[in-house]
Length: 77
Image: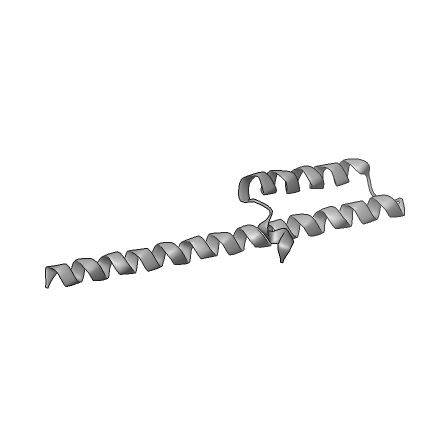
């Protein structure tokens, strides 16, 4: 009986870890999409004449930092 409970506990822990990993991936993807949107808005404002190049550069830097940490998988969606 103890072996069964140990296996059940391991399976539950494994499922929990997989679920947490998936949540983390989705959150990273959403953050990447938000940063990409922010970069696009900053670039658009700059080209229209009412945005600053510094804002575009800051948005680009934030996006590059996110990609360095989490990869660029969100760009493929």
